[in-house]
Amino acid sequence: MRISPKVLLGSAVCLLVTACTGQTGASDEGGGGGGGGGANTLRYLIEQLEDADELSRLEEHLADFEESSGIDVEVQQLDIDTMRTVLQTQLRAEDGPDVINWGSGPGSGGALADAGLLYDLTAAYEENGWEVYDFAKERVTYDGKVYGIPGEMETVGLYYNTQVLADLGIEPPRTLDDLRAACRTISEAGLIPMALGDQEGWPGGHLLSMALSSALGPDGMQALLAGEGSWESPEVVDALTFWQEANDNGWLGESPVSIDYDTMTAQYISGEAAMIPTGSWFVNDLAVGADFESGYVPFPAPDGEGVFSSGLGSGPFVAANTDNPEGAIQLLDFLASEEHGQWTVENLQQIPPRPVDTTGLDVDPLLAQVLDQVSTLSEGGGELGYNIDVLMPEAFNDTMFDGVQAVLTGQSTPAEVAASLQAASQQ
Image 1 (cartoon, helix red, strand yellow):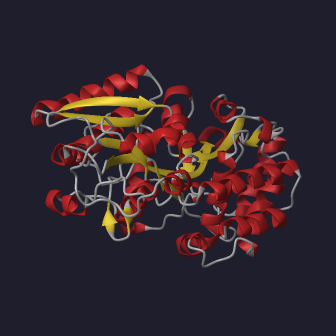
Image 2 (tube, one colour):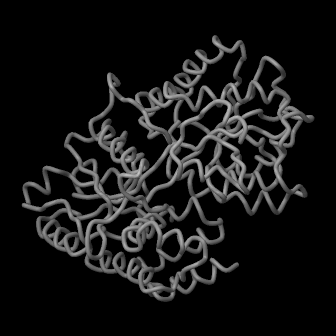
């Protein structure tokens, strides 16, 4: 299923889970007292889907697995806020889920593994030959053990209305100076240069992620996220300063902090804005709602072409206390297959964390472009940056979300926010 970016800001469940559990270390054994699915039934807990049609399509798809395996899959849904709160209890319950769909990365799945709530899948990877991009597999590998199938891949970059830019004689921006010049020309034409709605806070985290990824590159971002660099560095201050400059010049529309994400996307789809900085999940909205073609490029770097920042959505993990580890692994084998990847591309417009042959599939042209980009980059044909919010703890993300909003409202300077990020990274 498509995990919206709103889910990602909840991925740092680690503090809640690790603080409330007395266990350490994940179980290597599947037996235990929980996972009430039994030998012929699996309980599959997922985040609440956006509509009933998505659930119907998922259940129809899972029927193929049920027919071939003889195992019934009972899909259970919880809204993301409730799931954050009760997930630990669910995973400990005797009648709890056998398989859960949850965020990839150390702040989400990694926290559950640390709490002893996930089943070790290292041997299952070897036995089943699951093919996953290396960097995606790293996001579900904790302390040398693999605990899940990575969720769908998500990149964040800059969309642009191809017709508007062509009419104004603007090439897709490659550098920050290109982007500044484009924004000035678009603004003079009476359009919003870049739609932005940061009322919820998480879009601001993506602004910082994409600007920093392009400025520092993957190695620099990895060092920063690992605590080997400083959040008070000139690159962090400059990234925040660019967004302050863009807001001060009116390039982000009026009062972006008071506008929500849905209004932000509506501004672009309606043609009111010429560009929009957001993620690959937006491709489906464009296919459904826009009557113009869009391009999608990495956010520009200060001195040259940038890189897409990237992250992973939710993917399947097995509960440590499931009564049916063999059946659960069978389900994961189905979810890790190329056939399932093709199904998610065609039905949910997602980017699987593995190579997928899209020949013969009904795929929107822009999504096909994004799939090709991600496949090339993931297999060593380029570089990918990082989405900060899926890799950092909740307390840090809250500081980042509040800090970007403070820069946009003029309540804090970029240097002050950078200092607060550095302090939050050391807590």
